[in-house]
Length: 206
Image 1 (spheres, rainbow, N blue to C red):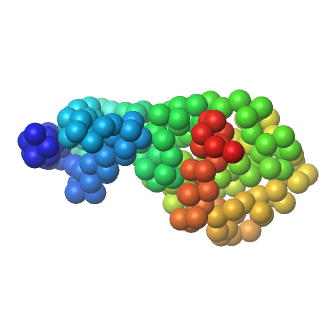
Image 2 (cartoon, one colour; image 1 turned 180 degrees about the vertical axis):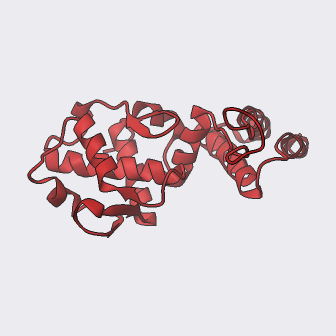
């Protein structure tokens, strides 16, 4: 059954790269793990998850034709959540309580009251969660400070006088550039920290 599912995936996603197929397989496995499926039902659950994830295959860019962007892979919201979950090591079913995804960017669905009480700590949390999600989705490899500022403002925790200072002590990121040209890259410990933060914010830990 599992072998048949993988063969079907290969047939239905011929336009995808090997990396994209590997991501689908990893996402299906992560979904089964997150759902705590009993061992005897895991092959069936994996097959069903794979079938669902494989539904979004490569699609032409708007306007059709074979021009630039015609091989872009269009992922569903669930697939994108699974990509983030796999990268940060969090339960994919919890992510909709934190993130609100659109085609171009990552926003937040979580309430301000769930974040730390001080604007300084909340700013660092928003920045880490935002950068981790964008980079997990491949939207960028380093996130510009202006993008981070927008999301911090959206969450109501922006402190104009101390914003840059607050960002200096984010756990698990490296910084490139200076002042308004700064960009933030999440490291492996940073993705892990983001996963722990998501778990805490969604009631899965202390």
